[in-house]
Length: 268
Image (cartoon, rainbow, N blue to C red; front, side, top):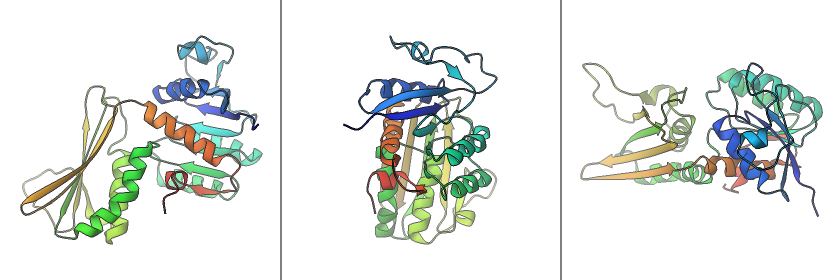
């Protein structure tokens, strides 16, 4: 019988991290949480992560430093922590699932460089449903054709820092890749001004921030006489946590490379 995968969870005390801790703890035959990492200035350092997550067990303290004693890192923290975490993973040959959002081009360059040494999966959204949608959206846009205008609206809670969401960008990039659009010229983020007449081939992306919305993404396709709406609604962060754990299971034991949720879902 295979031993449980040893997980190090970075951002463990955040909203996503706590759900990953809770769900992984509930599957002891698959996972063993050996490290729980929080930012160095956090007042939660030293607290028991299991008790903090509302679980009955105890015995694992939140720490600020990532140690090499793990199999797979799951990182839902901040971009500033990425470099240090990847350095540990590369040095000791550990796999990494990166769910942190708001990454820059230089962050992606770090991930690509790390993938020469370790298996690494970066996803703006680890939901299985969203990634299936991303995989199908390009074909849909192609089949509908250029007569259909496209808009994307994403909605999240009022504490989300980045906009538009990484998921909205992934949806747009899937459409651009399939239809030959250039994201640098064909994406427009919101509309403002006296002359914002829609240009042919343009894709509008709009961000809404309010309340405690977990995540909603709607892609609109419209032409004369009809409109199609393709929508994904996340009602719980558990969907992202389950997807991240599924990604960790997939990644464990894989050769070095940069993987995506499409690999996890075995989508071509």
